[in-house]
Length: 389
Image (cartoon, rainbow, N blue to C red; front, side, top):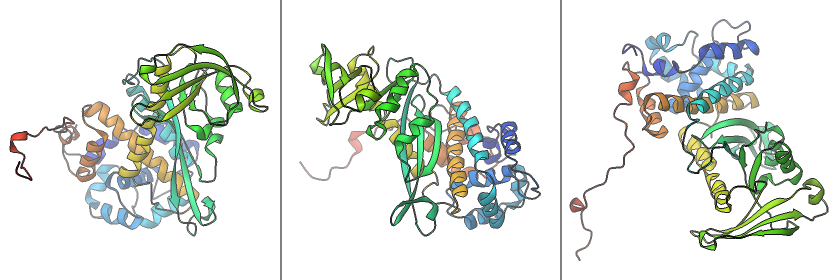
């Protein structure tokens, strides 16, 4: 790439700008806009995410300090706090959600061959949500409890590459289980979720849609055992059963057999009981699938630690949704850059390098050239002893 261009401009080359313009045109985002386009807004918010800016005034000050470079970084409009605040308040958040889905498609294609850690060819998704606490006086539209507001980000994560397949942003008062109604089920795929999504009528739709689910069982489930399978108790599996629900409501909502697996975690010595509609995979593989669900928790922890989504630049529902979708777009952009430029480096290291080098005029490949995730093992001979033995 051209060494005379900033790292920020080279990074933005990975964005499919024709697709972004289609999204803007579809929702009329630039209708009667003269001085601050949707692309300017996206670039400002992406810059804020990459450099962890705290406020609109902070974004304005940093960009004005590099005024001579802004045109070559892709900015065409006047960057100001008022312009950005007005855009976040009035531009339709669906523009950025639609563009985020475009980036999701690009990233999933790049990571389609990533190892899952299990001998399984099917796609595996983990569904979960994270709650972002808000101030009730500033965000009354998102009231969660009597003295508290919150928003939820519901994510369906493709476990191959930890790329979100679907994202939904709701108020904190929306129950997680309702998000099952929004899923477009993929036949043959596995969906992993915890007991917060336990609803037999909705789970039956997975079976009808030829998709598989794995979830934790509740203690009060009423059922009748019909078939026992032999198990290797040394693996932690205690029983593998085919059951039918016998509860007055559950038996009507899920009228076909289920598979029940009792497993004892050898590390934490916890009793875990799983329900699934897959009868072909070994019982131990089912338990390992549920263990892989932890990756969605790691995804939430990563974006909360390294992206700016715990505090917001605007207080309206529209501004909050725009910021969350731009944050996810930045995550996807970094994942795309990692795959194409520095496949051995971690997302964390790439993001840290970007945060301090966006204004530098150096080839982006050079910025990532020395990144290596190999752990340095210190020579024990040079370690100091705290106590004499």
